[in-house]
Length: 290
Image 1 (tube, rainbow, N blue to C red):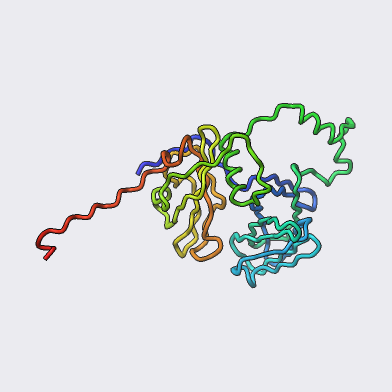
Image 2 (image 1 turned 30 degrees about the vertical axis):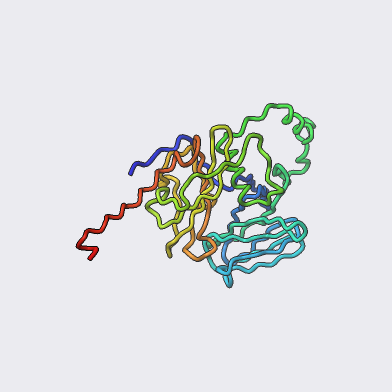
């Protein structure tokens, strides 16, 4: 079977900014799941800065201790486990913050703070808002606003928008000029996208910007083994392909499903290999009819 090439680089999710800052790691919440590493036997403090309720999958019972108080979540892994998702629900607004946590052996990790502004700033230097020449952060912001900003590549803008539409509350989705929903003209069960894996591929939705389309396709593991997802195994003519998660858990677990975002020129049905026609039924002979 022919394997088509990708004409641009492959993008990974989540799209976030992350910097190590002295004793606290800062991460930017952009409505995409945040990866959080844990080390067994050590507690890691997560400064959520919101009053939240924490939801966790049953698979973590006995493996992860979770405590929450005053906008801070305390996580302690009692044993190692692969990536699993925690849901932090804002008590006041109902908005979800998603954490993809995993645990392995290692030393204690620094606390992690979730930020919700447009940028993550260093806070470990006295006078960080002013440089040696006396220029303040407001002055720098004004200069940045006056400078022309580079355009976001179309595949990135489409993928980011699609991920927000699926994973973020609709009231928080950033509007992007020119992006509009389009109908999906694909089979309800795509068998040619990952023919070598026991995965069910179901189209969810699509959006277009000019002549470029992003199509969100749900992938669900039908097997009892974990599947590591590799974009090089996808069959089709895509500009970019982005997995929401890089692996699928065993069938029947909360982690057995993810989404792949396929960016194509024109519609996805022209880029994905066509389904094999169903074999025709042979007419019965007179002998068989008897």
